[in-house]
Every structure is written in structure tokens, then in C-alpha cells.
Length: 234
Ligand code: HEC
Ligand code: HEC
Image (cartoon, rainbow, N blue to C red; front, top):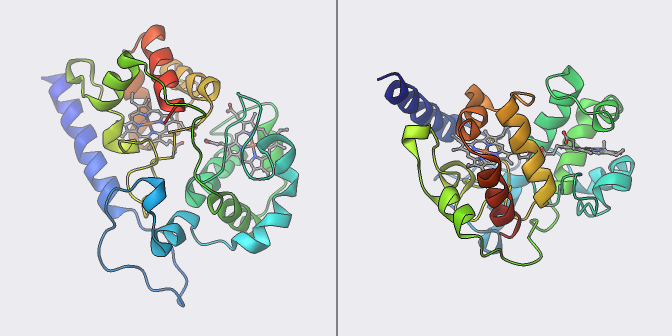
């Protein structure tokens, strides 16, 4: 009974997140009237790209982002496998993560101190710059069958809602206007695995309602590795 109750609350939280999240837009750009469909990166329209970028100015953001290039790459394609790609990531998600490092909700020995260096306006613009770059993509698709199975299917007895129901079938997020669920498809394998291990251990606790902690709680090391293989190839 307890498990079922938890699963229902997770699903309700999920529905609430999907329907309530709105990205602030400025007055000159009216928000689209209808919710955009689930997309793959290739098919994003101009309006959808605008929603992905968020409230900042991507042009002003480029020079402000120089202090991030050394680690995250000039176009957001970092080469170090433990430093996340930011290219095509949701602008509002990038902003939220940097604020989480600033508040101490997230901690990291190199990224933590970096967060102190950006004020709010600069952060919106920097986030917009990285979000406006082409969406991240894996070098080659993975044929990891276990990873694909776990990504696409619920395992409710273990309180695991499928990854695709929040991150989208290609791991590029659920909908362009919803920055709650980050782009994970095409991210570095080692970074993905590292974050999932942190969620499982409870070292990372910043997902809404603890959804990520619940999702990976009962997955084994081998299952997390399979997921990292599969997701990094998307
Ligand atoms: C000295 C290297 C370094 C610099 C400079 C740096 N970062 Fe990072 N950043 C990292 C590392 C490493 C991580 C991964 C931390 C972890 O594993 O928790 C990270 C994580 C992040 C994340 C989380 C991404 C995600 O997918 O959740 C964001 C967002 C981010 N950095 C933005 C920035 C921005 C914006 C700047 C410039 C103001 C910047 N970083 C500068 C090394 C750096
Ligand atoms: C109920 C919704 C939900 C489900 C299901 C879900 N996620 Fe997440 N996931 C999130 C949210 C929300 C975040 C963002 C947390 C934050 O704001 O920092 C996230 C973040 C992540 C991150 C960190 C990304 C980064 O850039 O740091 C990874 C990796 C991830 N999820 C992998 C998965 C995998 C693999 C699955 C399936 C086993 C999964 N997620 C299922 C909601 C979900």
C-alpha cells in the first residue's frame, strides 16, 4: 500500500510539474497558446527554441560566458567526461543549477566556487547562450539493450517511473517550454553515471520532490552503467 501511495504521489507531482511550469517571457514575445508537443531536437520551431533559451539574451551571454569556456567548452561541448555538456541544455535549468551551487544545495570543489562569480542578469544571459547552441548529441548510438529497456519502461514495484516519461524518449527533455527535466540524451557517460550515483547515495538532493532519488534508489551499479551507456548515445 505504501509503495502504491508513493507511486501515485510521484505521478501526481509529475503531472503538476508538467502542467504548471512556465518560463518567463518578455512582453515583446507572446507565449504560444497551445502546449508544444514532445519534440526531438531536429524539429524545434523558432518558438520552441525561444522557450528553451529562457529569459536571457544569448548574444550578450557569449562574452559573459567566457569564464565558463575553459571547462565547459566554447560552444558548451566540454571535452572532459566528468564536466557536463551545456550545449542545448534548457536555459532555466542551467540557471537553477548554478543557483543551487551558490546556495550550497549542490556542492563541487571546482564548480562551487565558480557560481559565486555570476550575478543574476549575467547568469540569465550566460544560460541563454549555452541553451541557444545546437542540442547535445552522443558520438554514436549505444546498443545497450538493458539501458534502453530501463529507460523506456516503468518498474513500479521498485518505484521506478520510466526515464522517458520525464526526460522524453530521446532524452532531450519533455517539452520545449518545460525546463524542469534537463536534457540528458547525448550527455557524457561518466558525468551521467556520476550524477545517478550521487542521487542514489543521497549526495545530490535537488530534484523536485526528490524524484531522482526515488527513481534510482533500487537500481544496481550494473543497471546505472547500462543507463549511462544508453543515454549518452542518444
Ligand atoms: C573549473 C572548471 C569549471 C568552470 C570554470 C565552470 N564549471 Fe560548471 N561545472 C564544472 C564541473 C566539473 C561540473 C560538474 C559538477 C558535478 O559533478 O557536480 C560543472 C557543472 C555545471 C552545471 C550543472 C550542469 C548539469 O547538467 O546539471 C552547470 C549548469 C554549470 N556547471 C554551469 C557553469 C557556468 C555557467 C560556468 C561559468 C560561469 C561554469 N559552469 C564554470 C566545472 C566548471
Ligand atoms: C518523475 C520525473 C523523473 C523521472 C521518472 C526521471 N527523472 Fe531524471 N531528473 C528529473 C528532474 C526533475 C531532474 C532535475 C533535477 C534538478 O533540478 O537538478 C532530473 C535530473 C536527472 C539527471 C541529472 C542531469 C544533469 O545534467 O545533471 C540525470 C542523469 C537523470 N535525471 C537521469 C534519469 C534517468 C536515467 C532516469 C530513469 C532511470 C530518470 N532520470 C528518471 C526527473 C525525473
